[in-house]
Image (tube, rainbow, N blue to C red; front, top):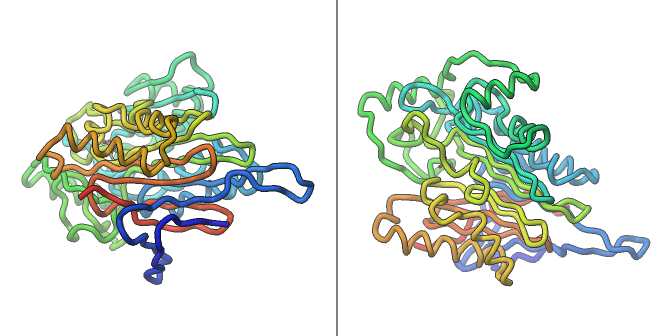
Length: 353
Ligand code: SD4
């Protein structure tokens, strides 16, 4: 049984689902079900950010539905997005303002093990390097040249440092003005005008395909364990050396197997200043639903940012130990994808404004 806590309107041909009423967008499945032998088993669930989450969820679900671990699911899921050309994930993404693509990623399992990389260049799958940091080093985070050296020592290939055609086009366009003006929801396939490249990315790639942003994913497996992952090129045309929230454990990603798993997307600086993902987990520990917990932290960001909150977007996606998924955003326009045994659906997140 799937319960959507708000009336649901099935919308367009792409299978998009909008939850009306703006109030609630929790996606609930029973965490514990009885199998034929009468023993309890757990129904897996995976949730991820933005439109790109749909494809990523498919790969994650393959792992989850065959009894695999949430950790494998969240790695393999976001690798799909790292393999695609987009504005904001993987080597095809937009560069920093000096013309270099620098990638951030993090991963966390059900036992508080975590690993991350930041400011990593020329490596195709930063999420897998983050996992190696977690599993093979005594550290949690490696950055820049050191992270790249480690990746090479683990057998990852050094890719050519050329920009993808779409990134090159966007970069040249951006250089004309070189302004830093955040445009939120660039991740969304239809949210902003085509060819608007001010801070993040063009809405469409040069070949006409839709663009997307940071992919964050949280999953619960059939063993009852949670894990999460996040991978991004960060803010397009950022200052060289800038690192966002995505590789910061507790900010862009946090997993507490007693409670839930949370991932963030949007303006990383404002996620970091509230220890975003960790804060959402703590609200869930106090009994809030995933959506309520996300909302409470979004409200805090708005209190802190005051009128400047109008210029940024921040969004959280959370799942709890019972297999309930929820999300919340500062502004309209954030969507997230949830896959259960009932299918893979794109949901419209609730928002403050
Ligand atoms: C960052 N949080 O680097 C990332 C970017 C992002 O949707 O998620 N954009 O700040």
